[in-house]
Image: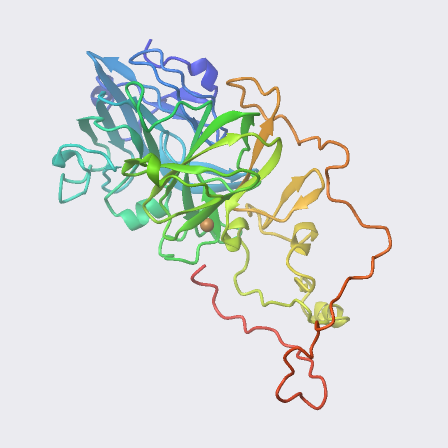
Length: 469
Ligand SMILES: [Cu+2]
């Protein structure tokens, strides 16, 4: 049985047509497996090779392999894909085996691995196995370590997964284009036995941070963008399209996060403290571990965090750059907070029928505003929570900690039912007199010179570019 567990993985399909790739050439290769769904697939429990506790790829899947005389053989197909980034919003990306990012590859320390890479793009590609110890000619830098893989051809990479850890893969060929188009994937090498620095955990999640610049109403990323992206995604999904991370109460949880964007992302977990237990370089020494609630994942880095899920509830988990928790919008929207436009909009609408005033009270109104969006546009901030709109998009999800969530069950338990009296509530009593002490007040350090009358400023910031966020 080559590709076990297919029934469990649901959306998997074998190769139907290989386009320009010759059928004869394909016959000797492991049958490529494709995924047509953007859902979080159940962990791929290894039925051949040495055992390990598999990871769960957020809105992704693990690539099945075939054992060939003790070698684990994988088949990656580089190709254009249509990725649903959120319900109702599809992007035309490049990826592997039907999705962007490509499937996660999982092996065990010491495994000999053979990876067939078929190029179905219109230009050269290659794969660099980010972080791996391997023969120099297998490192995947086009022109330096190998010729680029021409369109229609299949190249073979082979090496031993020498050290346990969390790695990534991506092209080193026209990489500004190919990575901007979504070509990347995750790689996990599990330890071959008990490891002094790698703990066993109950839930082991992984995902990549990536970013796109797709104009509202279009589907293809602008590849020249350097910093001013408008879609900040986890595994090419944006909230509310990112699945929750479902864990059981008191589970030990590991989350592996790789950053292949062009800026850093401080990833922040609510309700718990975690240890950073690994980087691209391997497991961190125990002496370096301290509790954190936010960990910055810099460009080209992987960070592996671990915590005990001992607080029940629905805990926000997100990038702490506030612009990274919202979706595409026009970037030249001026800040209108505090500006009084009474009556102005109606007058302008006589001249420009679709004119509207945005954000007088802040931008959250955008979540409720029924604004005309072009087709195939992700709502800017559209998550619906148990208490109303969640003013978030982009790099945001929820860690759901539940009693009674069975081992291996990743199904969404719904919203947390808060015990009575444990939700913030409206204050309806009388305000007590605030206690003050004698010296409090402006007399403590009097101003040298007071203005003769109070000055009120009504300004809005100029709306320059939006770059650098
Ligand atoms: Cu971010």
